[in-house]
Length: 315
Image 1 (cartoon, rainbow, N blue to C red):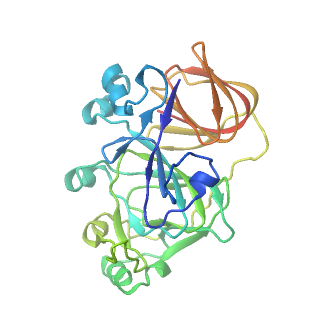
Image 2 (cartoon, rainbow, N blue to C red):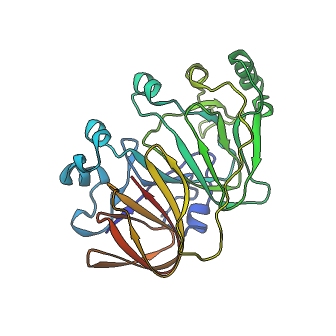
């Protein structure tokens, strides 16, 4: 059992929920936009908090135990195929799009980015933008981004806790103010910002836009209004499949009492403790777990005891 320590990101739109709701120890940072829980990306690697690898990065760990244990992608790129992060939007995120694998490798020196959003908390009136509400042209999108009317072209979706949304590469999107999201994505930091509400950074300068690349990768067709898939809130031991991002499996459990989890085909498995506390046991080791922590299991079977809500991601 390996506890993962996140990398925190301060961005202009971030808030305080990662500290106040998830009870994470963010130190002196007043506001946190993102907490990179599982990352081997060069823009920020999570580190190991216990055992003989304590203080090492997650990439260092896999360099030692062998990327070949994760598969061809890991061997080729020296990265995990998945990143997991928490996102706290105190303000709207920029309207943006992510490239697919081929475009990203050629133009961004990075991977493509399909992602999935799991809504951990949502203030009253919180929403997401996801996809166009009509067929559009590049010229229409460019004009709307420049004159500030692009929001009128987008599906605006009210959200609530427990809903799940899939965001394939090429889909225009934005997380709205008041959302606390767990994002499960392909390993990538490639984002093309199309519109940013006229905001300026700490130096008074507008943040850069990436209209050329963004328009090159956009899916310009109308997207039917997505419906967030809700997860039962009652304590249940049954596995609730939320969806898949590439070959990544995502499941949620309301764990009450002792639960045994078995993933016979998984190359690695991580558990995010969303609520509550308890203990986890694997291969004779036992550790206390609590809300906000992220644990990686090197064995294919483990137990969780206590009363907690857990998100489990396996590859």
